[in-house]
Amino acid sequence: MWSDGRFYWGKKEIEAKGIVVAFVWMSSQERNVRPYVQLYSSLGWNSLVCHSNLLNLFFPDKAMSLALDILDELIKVVRIKPCPIVLAAFSGGTKACMYKLLQNEYQLVRDCICGQIYDSTPVDFTSDVGTKFALHPSILKMSSPPRLVSWAAKALSSSLDALFLTRHEAQRAEYWQTLYASVSMGPFLIFCSEDDDLASYHTILNFAKRLQDLGGDVKLVKWQTSTHVGHYKRFPMEYRNAVTELLVKSAFLYSQRNQQPPGGTSGNGLRSNEISKSVCNLHKAAVNSNQSFGRVAVGPSDHFFLPSSLEFLDAKGMGAEQDERRENLPPLSNPPSINPHGVLGKILFDVCVPKNIEGWDVKRMDLLPRHVFSSAHANANFNPLKCIRRSRL
Image 1 (cartoon, rainbow, N blue to C red):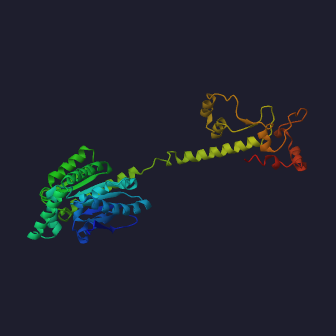
Image 2 (cartoon, rainbow, N blue to C red):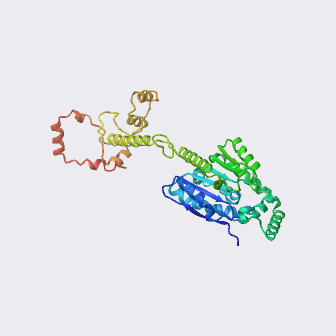
Image 3 (tube, one colour):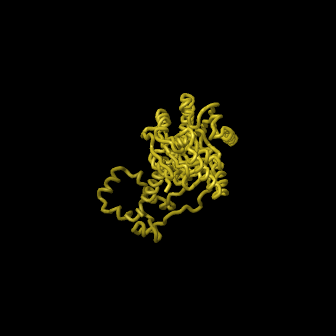
């Protein structure tokens, strides 16, 4: 059974600036990809390298299977420490895996993708392109393929076209739509050559112009003469400078996406200092409520009022502006209260409050002399806890 491909970490440092996911060309070996891994590492970025199988170009399910494995690997990292992610595609790696990763709906990973690099790609995958990929010297690692290999590749391509003619066109449309739909993810860097016999310069140029028409940030670096996926080897300084610029842009975009407003916000949009004030206000309201239950009635209308919304506004202590706003509120005709003579009052306070207190010498506690107050407490046998033990409900 054919494998979908493989992937591995080219470089994985804890303090890296981000991750470059490199979808390299088919039949490439680790030694071929090592210069790119070293380039990203020298700029402070980790690299996750993906080697796709040639059949992934013809079977999207195999490309999706490999993309899901890479997605799972990225999720393991960004769940612990989110960081910017840049996708770098080489040659057929765009079709063999990367465009399927762009279709993922895992929001955490999508929010981390902040840029894309295209080296000798994208390629318009018509029926003859598959044969060109199978027979290209960069794939077979030889100047000219044997006649038997050439015949077998053409026969395989023709058979696949006959079996999946209608599906091939639908997959081709899905491929380009996915690439264009990613225009909002971040800046684009595209490397190409006018004499590339595999990745058509006109196809890549039209791709770049279309992205710009859609509002994308696109930089196209082209050479008149350069080999397929050989631009970095031939023009190392120009290639490095362009990649450095792209990675800086991507990191800056990621920091903008994740920048919080001054003071910080919670999930519902409230600032942390506003939450602290609200907690303090609730605490004050609770204290006022306990004091209202604990005070002695000194007038006919001085019953045990429950804390209302007006009392909560008082607890905020917001000055004259708040007082004017409170004056405009309609008065409460009958504020909620608890009658100590009713059934609920007896249940809560467990005492019998006499209705007729005529002749009693009731005075405010703050007007009594200090020595009278202290002696009364010293000589009294009355236990106040008995009266309020149920008021804690």
